[in-house]
Length: 76
Image 1 (cartoon, rainbow, N blue to C red):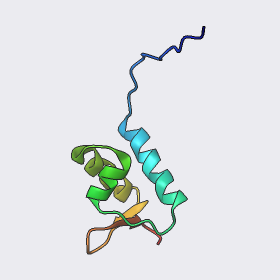
Image 2: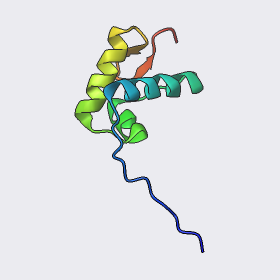
Image 3: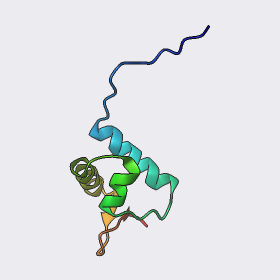
């Protein structure tokens, strides 16, 4: 008989992890355009975390926000 063993160690996702994940999503999907609400749903994160992540990526010039509120890669 085989018993499944679950890893019970807590997982901690940092802002850095989420920033890297967002960069990966935008790299994997050229032309990706998301509102903040869409980014929240795609990433499964709360509004405050999403705002910090998107702001960080704008400051790093990886993303830019269009006039109609879409987040796109800065060079697209």
